Structures are given as C-alpha cells and as structure tokens.
Length: 446
Image (cartoon, rainbow, N blue to C red; front, side):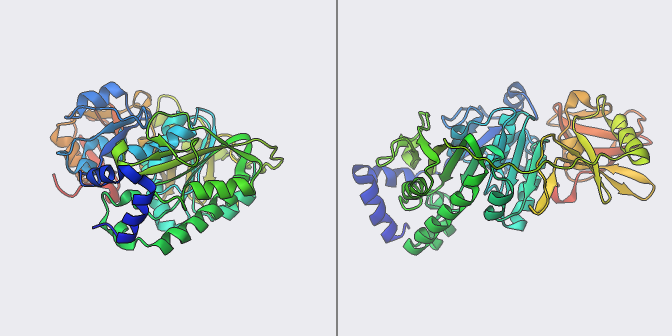
C-alpha cells in the first residue's frame, strides 16, 4: 500500500492522470535487458536467447524481458557480459548524456553499474569511463559489473564528490549525476522503498543532490555536458534541484533533452519525466551545458612502463594468449600488471580501486593471468579457445567451477567462450582444463 502522504502529493502532481498512475502501478514491474555490443553482435544475442527481443524507446540498446523469464542472471550469456539486466527506463539518462567514442565521461554515483556499463558500450573502447561510488562495498560490485561487460578503458574509484571536483576540475567532456534519491520510482518493485519513504527523506535527499551536483560541476570542461537524473517523482528532488543549481551556477544552461520518450516536465519543459504509464518505472532527466570557460585541468598520469625482465615476462605471457597484444601502457604496481588506457589524469588521492585492466598477478616464479584479461578479450584475438555451444553440459559445468575434459592435448592458458563470446579461462594440461572461473561468480546449481 502506498503511503497516504505520497498519494496526496502525487494527486496534486498528476491531476487527472492520478487514476492512470494507480492502474499502471498495479501492473507487473517493467523488466528489460541492455545488449552489450562490446561482447557480442546483436545477431548473436538474437539467435541465442530463447525469447524475442522487443525494443524499448529509452535506448537503442534496451529490450524488454518477457514476464515468464526467470533467473536470467544465471544465463551463460549474462555471465559472459553479452547483456545487462536493467529496467528499461533506467537507460534513459545515458541516452540523454549521449556519450561518443573518445569522450572522457564521469559517472559520479555509479553503483551497481547499469549506467556506467551503458556508457562503456557507447564509448566502444575509446576515451575514458570514470565510474565513482562513495560506498566502498558498492564500488566493488560496480567493479565486478564493469569487468563482466568487458570494458577496458575504465577507472573505478571510491571517493567523495568534493574530492572529484577539486582534483579533476575541467577534465570531463560529459558527467552523469544519477543521484541517490527517495526512490519513488522503485515503489513498483521494492516494498522496502515504500517502507523507507517520508517527506523528511525527500527533503534530505534534495539537499544532498544539490551538494553532489555543485561538487562535480567543476569537473565539466567548457562546452561539456552535465546530466542530472533520479528515479523519483518528487519536484523537490527533480525540477527544484535543477532550478537551484542553475541559479547558483550561471556557467551552465539548461538544454532540451531532445528525446521522444516520457514527457516534458510541466515546470521545466526542457527536462524529461517518465511515469509508469509512459512505459517505465519512473525517472527524471535534465541536461545542462557548460557555456563558460573552465581554466582548470589536472596533471597527467605518470606512465611508468615496466622494463627489463618484468616487461619481457608480461609480454611473453600476453603473446602466449593473444595474436596481437592489447593496446595500452603496461605498468606494474606491487605484484600486479595493469594495461592502462591513454590520457589518464594523475590518480593520486582519488580512492582508485582499479584503473584499466588488471592483466596478471605475480606468483612464485610465474605470472598468472586474470579473469578480467579474458573477459575483456576479443574472441578473434585469442590464440587458444574452447568455444562451447550455449546448450552444452560443459558450459554449465564451467560455470559451476568444475574441471573439463578436452578433445585435444593443448597446453597452457585457454580462453573459454560461449557462442564466440569470451567467458573466462582455464589452464590446459593432459587433456584436462583446470577451471579459473572466479568462485564469487560461479553458479551453484545446474
């Protein structure tokens, strides 16, 4: 049951559409997935999933999931990063942000990673995706999803927005603030969101949302774009936050979202609202452009490439696995080798959890490649591949963490793929494949 005060507020907001809103709230929640072109072609996804892919209006990558589909997170293609499960209208904010290959993009409140991985798909491996989450435990979930989706040009941080604003001033072409909110758009699917709701919570959220916007606005270069979004309906957290921000920041101007989904806001028609009767659980999106100079720019990252025997060892390992060594600067930090994207700023003091690809870890007398190295690999670039069909018993056994029997007596590290999509790896010896799929990612039942 919806809170009485919430109902009273929504009646004022919606007027004659209140009954339509109630009827929409009584329907099952919207379900969707977002295709990941970094990992597979649309033809592969369409051919291998056993349900039709019906597009949604919120993103060219977003499709509906039929109501009867259950436990889709256990699907091998989900493990392989071919798609991300995401309520359809949640993809709307990145569509408005419109990231392009080569852009430097900041996702400020990024966990669990739905919008970040959508940005990563749009960048197509070019530019930089910086995904931040202030809560460390949630930042680790974010990292896991970025790894699964095969994004190579990423930085994951756990840092307060104030610090981002200070140290990364003027660095980004596009910034997304998908702000923590009262979650009214989640009422459709989450009873806890209803239980936690109060007018006081709405007001507290609006204060925090403005503070986040204010902090990270300094990171936007002149001509850059700042998108603000929430999954709530309250004007205090939506239009009023944007109006407050624009009064305090004359260097930004509100732009039209230029999309057809949802509806224009009654008070700020350049912004966009999505209600359940519009085909999504509930979102608000505003797009702002920095129209005045931002003279700040952070110092560049000091790329200290590994040399000598260390360089020889990592290049030898990568040459064993790949036909062409992946692009990027190879650096070593402690016992780990990373492949970093170009153009990074100085990372010091920014709570970095991961930058680029963790390629290998130094063990006693050897280098061990990582799951992320294979998850981000291009199938056609892998030298030794065990490519398994979707319906095979072997793919299910691999996801359980079991050893596999091999037909050929190959030796060394082997890419395991499903339908031509890299999934993980193992080490082959004597016609057996020792499984290296991470324990925390494995299925527990067939």
